[in-house]
Each structure stands twice: as structure tokens, then as C-alpha cells.
Image 1 (cartoon, helix red, strand yellow):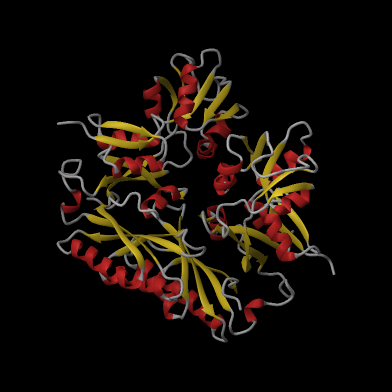
Image 2 (cartoon, one colour):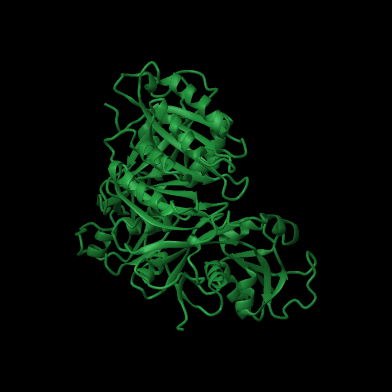
Length: 306
Length: 306
């Protein structure tokens, strides 16, 4: 069997790369893409079997670029569907070139310079304040890039803040592990597939048809006509009427006209024989009160999975 | 009478400064603040009478820093209320040092270098592609800063993309006006005030008590208990039951626990004697099904104002 091709947001050794490697395993061919749009296009054009895309972080919230690509205002990715989700807990390590600090001791060994992505400084404040106070900091475009830089530096006694995955990729020593302030900082990834793809879903079974204890999550988008007050409430009521539990609602600009919005609604339902019917009924209901409603897929909710 | 003190997000001549100047006029003392949080703190601590804060752009959507400050997870800004809104249409100009291009002609005059904020390049793509193709570009931290740089440069034949307001502030020539691709790119600002402030609202009257044709907009936030499916739908139904038309719903992380959310709901209602009663009834209803619900204010919707 030919190996699966999976698009992820590069560079190599990024958190998206790590999520792709953990979810699809070593037999898949993981393809870095420079933008979210490129990864969507790879699935739409069937250059990749799947894409794995960050959609939400437990601390920072939604990734709006991903929401906008899912909304797909210009009908570029009409066949892209969400088929699964994957949760990756973000752990940061203090990394250095192999052998650079042979007798490293926390808070005693002098590090000349630190490299990481701007967001990571904020995520490791407590550790940095305690053990790396006053050390020069250099912002770089990704934590993976930080790892790459210290791997190549031979003169300076520098260190990077990045993942263990990046350490393995760049051949670095792990001086410290789990230096993040919040142990539960997690990113949710969506796994995308072309609706026209044939064959069984990876990992070899359609997990939406599994045990009845599974909660299924579905995603819908729609616009509300501006001249019809009360429509948003009417649209949201439809989910309730069909036994769906709304878990999140996001509002994005329609970009058709200022202050007209597209809504993205995620909802959960216990898996039963009626689940597929409920999706069809909701779509029918939405068509009557909203504009351009779309169904973007159903997948097993990994948080409630037994 | 002492002049009003108004906090805005700096630097001087920013779009926030322009919004503050247009809304409050020349008699107010406009105070630049380096962060959104500082402007909220100025209102909470009564160092400023008002703050004016961008909350949403018609193209890019919500400003999440503002949403997070309104949510106020750590009870720092408990007295901050929204009392008004102001819409500023974003127009960009091509600006140069006074006298630098005495006989400027579109597409013919050679400009050596352009300065602006990264977002502005994307907002002026059509003009730049047509008339400034191949000109060297330099990113700076704000459009106002770009204006400041070209005002000081004496050797180079450079230009900045910034507002007419920045041109006036930095004493620049306006070579071109309205070079933005989208003529209707608008930012909505919220005007904040301390709930304990005494005296009449600027501009001298409480516009929520005006003509009956005014639409009033209110803002509420609440959290939904995770173990109670259907609660979000129940909470949103409360708005409908009390005659409020929901216009936007935003979901932000609670930061209490991953995947638990805070919802921000904006809703409109025609101004009547019952409006204030409706707010109280909604709050009562929300208290029964949600957690930590808050009412953040009511103000005249400027889009529907007669």
C-alpha cells in the first residue's frame, strides 16, 4: 500500500508536525506547507490525502485563519471536510547543542543567550524568571527554528525553548523538560480530508460509527440576513430541537458587507442510528432561516471518548 | 469645567487617536496608553474619564485582547462599562515629507522607499500593484510611526502609507488619498467609563434615553457549566424571550479549565420604557442557568441610529 500523504503547517519539527507524526505515525509521508491555505488546497486538489490544522488553543482560543478557511467565502475548498480531531498538549523544553553543557545544573550553569518564538516566553515565565533571569533573549519565527539555530551555533553557549520533538529532530540535548507555566496548555487540531476520497478512514475505521458511548461532534456554518431580527436565535434553536448540544459558536465577518457575519457552530450528539438523520434535519432547518449554510463534517469527540 | 481625560491606544496619530479626536473633539485631553490593559486600568482607577478601544474590524473581525479585557477573568476592571460606540472608516493616504515631491504625478514620480504597518500593505494592494510596483518596502510598527519616519528623513525620496490624521499630526504632504482597496473597511470602537462616575455622559446627554427610534445595544458575558448539555442553547433562548435580537456571539477560553468557554453576547433592542427592565430580566434568567454572568452596559447602536 502506498503511504498516506499528510499536509501540515511547517516548518519541520513544528507543533503541527508533531501532531501529524503522533496521529498518523511513522508510515505516513508528512509534507510541510508554508501556509494554512496551502494545506487546505492540498486536500482540495488531492495532492494530500489528509491535512492536520490547528483550530484552537485552550489558552489563546480560536485560530481565526483556520475558521476563515473553513468558512471558505470564495468557494475554493468546497470538498474539504473535517473527519477527526487530535489534542496535543504543548510542552516546552530547554534545549542545547549536543555536549554544549556537559554538567548543566539548573540556575547555576550560565547560559549566554536564549532563542524561541515570542509566544513561548510568555508560556514559560515562571521558569525563566526563576532560573534564567537577565539572560539575553532573541525572538525567532518558530520554536523549531530556535532549535535549529542552537544546533548550528558552535561559539556561543546558547539554548532554545522548544519541544522534545524538535530536540529529537535537530539532535539536541534536553537540559530541562516541561518548563511551561500551564501544564494543560493544549492545542486542538482538525484532520481534513476530501469528501470525494475513497476508502476507509485512517486509522482504518470510521470512528463515527463506533461504540454507542462515543460523542459525535459536527460543524456547521451559516450567515444570518441582516434585515431579519431574531434569526440568529431561531437558527440556534434548530440545534436544540434536533438533540444537538452546542459547544461553541464563533462569529466571523462575512466580508460581503460590514457587520454582516458568518457563524460557525460546533455541536455534540451521542452516537446513535439517528445521528446522520439529525445532521440532515438541521441542514434543512438552517436552509429555511439562514443564508449559505454548510455542513463541514462529523467526527468522534476525543475529549469524551470512552 | 476641567477638560475630559480620555485614554486611547497609542502611539499618537494612531487610528485610536483619530477615533478619540473625532468622538471627543478638541477640548478633551487625549492620553496615549501603550496597551489595551493600561487603558482599561485608567478607567477602573479613574485616572481617565473615558477610554476608547477598538473592539472589531469589519474585515478582520473581533479584537480578542479587548474581548479578554471585557471578560475580566481576574476581576481587575469590575467597574468598567461600555457607554457608547464609534465607527471609524479606515482610509489610507500616500504621504511624504513637506516639499519632497513638488511635482508628484501618480505612477510617474519615482518613490525610493515605502514605509507602513504590515497590515496596510494588504489593505492597499491594488494601488501598490498599479502605481508603486517594485518599490522597496519597509515594515514598521504602526502607520503613524511610518509617517513619523518620512517626516524626519531628509536624504531619501521615501513615502509612508498612513491616515490623513497622521499627515496633519506629522506635518506631511498628502500625495494620494483613499488608496485602500476596500472603501468600507471600518473599525468599531467602544467607549468605556467607570460605573461609579458621576455626571452626564459625554456628549452631554445619555443617548440611551433618546428618541424611541434608537436601537439599544447591550453586552453580556457568561460561562456555561461543562457537565450540563444544552445549557448554551437555554442561555441564548433567554435573550429571545425578552425581545432582544442577538447580533453577535463570541467564544473565548475561560482559562479556568481547557475547553470551558466564556461567551460574549451582543444584542439589540428598540428603545422603550421596558428596555432597562429587559436587561434585569435577562440577567436574572442567565443567573439560573450559567456561571459568572455579567452585564457590561447598554448604548445607542450607531449603525441604526436615525
